[in-house]
Image (cartoon, rainbow, N blue to C red; front, top):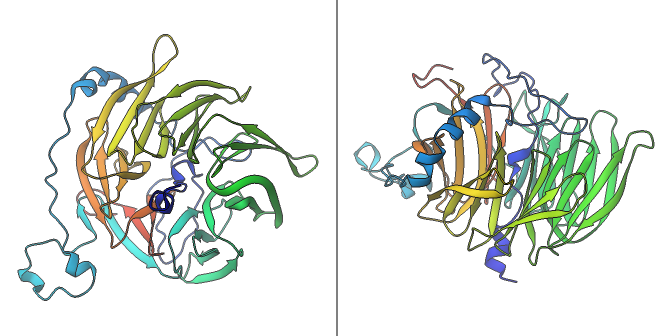
Length: 397
C-alpha cells in the first residue's frame, strides 16, 4: 500500500459532537450557544441548519453549471511562517496565519511531537482532548491553556472523536473508549490495522479500519457494555472517512469510492464512484453530502427523486483536499472549510462557494473540530493545535 498516501489518511472530525465549553483563558462565551439536538451518544452536529438546506436546494441548478473562481488569495510569506523573514513590513507577502475577515486566532497549544489525528471536547469537561500519531492522548486545561495530562497509549493513534461525555480513540487493531462522567474505560478489539475513522449514530459506534472493513458496536446501557462488532464489508481499500446522515452511513475509502449503507439493516444500498483518488473526508450537512479527495475536488451530492445519491456540483482546487468541516460564522452564515495539502484551509461561503478567507500553517492540517460559542480548533501534521474564534466581519467578538 502506498506509504505516502497512508501518511495522509486518517479521520477528520467533521462529525464530532458540539459540546458545551467552559469559561477559561481562551474561551469566550459572549456569542449565544446554538441549540443542538442530541442522541444518547452523539449530537446531530450542524445538520439542522435550515438556512443552508433551503439555499442549497434553491441554487442546485446554478451549482451544476458554476465554474470555480480563480484563486485570488494573497500568498503567505513562507519565510515568515518559519520565523526568518528579513523584509519585515516591506515584504510583499502576507505576514498572518489568516487572510480574510471573520476569524481570529486565540492561542496555539504545543505538546504533540507528531501529526494531530483528532480533537474533541466532551460535554461536562473542562478539558480539550487531542491525540497524535505519536501515541499520546493529551488533555488541555481550558482555564490555562496548558497540558493537563498526557496518556501514552503505547501505539500509533489514527483517530479521535468526542460525543457527549464519551471519547473514542482509534488505534492499531483496537478502539479505546473513555466516559469522563463515569470514569469508565473500554477497549474494543476486532479491527485489523489502524482505525482511521469513527462516527456515532444513536447508540451505534461505527469505525473504519485499514483492512477496508467497517466495524459496528451497539452500546447497551443496562449492561454498560458495547455489543458486537458487526462487520460491513465491501470496500477494497482502507476506510478513511465516515459520516452519518438521514439514516444513512457514508464511507469513503482508498479504493476511490463512497458507499452508502442503511443504518438499520447495515446493508450497502449504493456505491458512489465520482472520485478518482482517495476519499479523504465526508461531511453531511442539511440533506447534502460533501466529499473531498486527493483528486483535487470537493463534490456536493443530493438524493434524487428516484432515491439515488447524485453529484450536483463539483468544486475544483489546485491541490488535493484532505479534510472538510462545516461551520456557522458569527453572523450564522454557513461556511465550508476545506483543508488542502498546500498547508492551508480554504474557507467558502455556501451555497455560492465564494471565498471567505484562508488559514495558513507550516504543515498540512488534518484535524478540524467545531466547538460551541464560536470556537474552531485545528491540528496540523507537526503536532500544533490552534484555537480560533469566529468574530463579526467588523472585527468585534
